[in-house]
Image 1 (tube, rainbow, N blue to C red):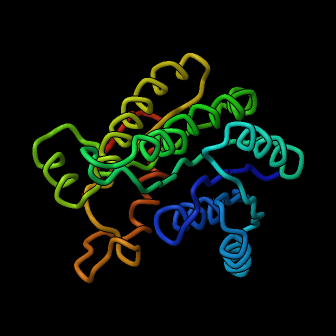
Image 2: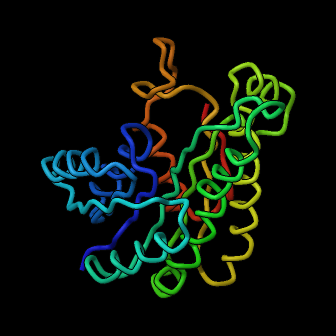
Length: 228
């Protein structure tokens, strides 16, 4: 049976490139997002490219739904070998005025969702000596430039939740190493071509980031790396 990667937070950028790269390496792919129509179209496109793919609509901020997701994947595609956490959420732009409920929702999706996914997949990941691969963003980096950019682009909530995701990924790297499970994070410090953030001046290619994830997965060494 083929190895299975579950791509959580599927979209046209990094996650699509990761699905294609791991598919080229022999993985079958479960793609996960909320929009049914987009997932079904993406699954057809990936299948046309030779990647065995199944679409799983899911609200990744709903813990019960996430647990059910991994149960369905396990039943339909076999044991999970890799979880790619590429989840993105909007809200909490200006934390001086934004409703705190927006920040709670972002935390549920970006951070608590990752914890739930790891817990749900952990029996498989331990059995397969698998991996958790996390995409993160520049706004979560702890330096004045990143802080200023998060405020300038009205993305303070994303800065807070990305910072929490960064710390979580690093702690999971340490904790899960004793279980034989690798956790690696790529912090994307730039704009990816072809995504919603691309206003004509994007400087990064999603396929190159996917290649970095594959390298990290193979080497199983670095907890985090910055791609710029």
